[in-house]
Length: 310
Image (cartoon, rainbow, N blue to C red):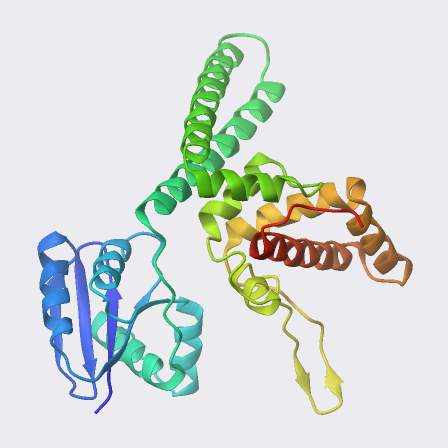
C-alpha cells in the first residue's frame, strides 16, 4: 500500500495527516517536534511522498530534517493545492483539513521531490535576500530625501541613507568572500559573468536561488524561474499567454539582465529587435529575451564553457 503524507505548517505547530490510513497528529514546529516527525514518518512502509506547502520560512526546519533523513519530501506551491481543493469541491478550511488535502494532492499529482540546497547555498540565498532588502530600503530613503525640505527631517534621512550604504557595502564584501572562497561558485560566477548583461549581483542571485542551473532542460529551468508561458484555450478561442509562479527573485534578476543584454549583448539585442520588428509588444519581447538568456546561461553552466559571440 502506497502512503502519502500532508503537513500543514504554522509558526508553532505541524498538523500531519497520513493517507490512506487517516491517522492525524499535531507536533510542535521546533527541534523536538521535527525530531519526532522524522521518527514517526521514517517508520512508515510504502511512503511515496510527503507534501509541505511553502510558507516563506516556517516550513524550513521540517523540510531540512526530512530531507536529511532521506525521506521523499516536496515543497508545494500553495496555489496548486488551492486549485486542487476547488477541483474536488473542498470548501472548508482548517489546519487538519489542509493537511489531509495536501496528502491527497501528493497522491494525485505525485510531484517530484527536488534535492534540498546545501547549508552553504541556503546561507548565500539568505544574504542575497538581505541584500535585496537593503537595496529596497535605500531606494525608499533616497526618494524620501529628494522630497524632504531642508532641515531636521532631511538630516535624519541622510543619516539613515549613510548607514544603509555602509551596511550594503559591508554585506557586499561578505558575499564576495563567501563566493570567492568556494571554488565551484567562483568558477560558475566567472562563467555566468562572461555573458554580456550578467553582472556579479545577477550571477550570485542565480547561484543562490537556482542551484539546479545547468542540470535541467531548457523547459524545466524556465518553469522554475516562472518564465515558461502557459496559454488559455477552449475550442477555437485562444487567450493570451502568461507567465507566473516559479522563483520570483530569479525572474526579477533575469529581467534586469535581459534589459542590459538587449542593449549590449549582440546576440540577444538582435533577438529582441527582431521580435519587436515582427510586431511583438516590447514587454513580450523582454520576457522572451529573459527566457533565451536563461537558456544560454543553463547551457554555459552545463557545458562549463564561457560565452562566445560566434
